[in-house]
Amino acid sequence: MTARRVLRWGAVAAATVLFLYPFVWLLSASVKPRAQVFDNLLIPRTWAWDNYAEIWRAAPVAAWLVNSVVVSLAAAVAVTLTSSLVAFGFAYFRFPGRNALFGLVLATMMLPAAVTMIPVYLIWNSVGLAHTQVPLWAGNLFGSAFYIFLLRQFFLGLPREVFEAARVDGAGHWTLFWRIAVPLCRPALIVSFVFELKASWSDLLKPLIYLRDPALYTLPRGLKALSDQFGQAGEQRWEIVLAGSVLTTVPLLIVFFVAQRHFLAGITTEGARPGR
Figure 1 (tube, rainbow, N blue to C red):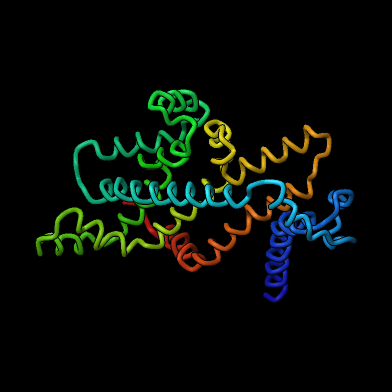
Figure 2: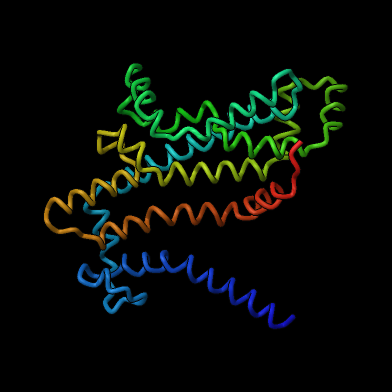
């Protein structure tokens, strides 16, 4: 038993080191001089804290940070609200073809994003919003199949008797959703919110497609422009780009640690809930 426990904790420790190594390397490389960035030493021989000051001087990082916060929050709030509404409808209401319709929603996850990229761009272009930040988050107003599936499982796990009692007391469908289902499924909603926040925060493809004005850039798009600028100048300043990557990563770590208790509760509870 002791040997098994040692092996188990050894495997956990090895996996932890494996997953932490890239981030530790990033932190280390971001405070190294340019000539030492790729020496693979986790403790720099020479510390170059000026890299972080330099990136603020080289680019409008503050504006990019604000853009990322606005776009990510809008995307996360939009997809969490709309997906939860659709998921509650599939979980609560009984109507003919419900399972077939739900299966059709799930089937959209099989559709590669590259297939819809051009048609979606043409739609935004036709309404004059192709080169704004709106396409980065407004598509989430129509929900997401993954989050609909995730939240539906939670709503199915709620006792139906609670809703029936509320209906007897005169509660409407919106009250059932907002006053009963949402508070009881808060961990699942937080999981969806954090997932989408992370996806939108680190997304580079959509900003590359839609954003032309540097004042509208998000952090990933801005770092890409910064990297291209340094590359064209013949001096790829990786230390500056890596410092920017750290600035991009730290907010996500803060969000995760703040929401960690609810996040882990949502994940573990989801695994314990049977679908119905």
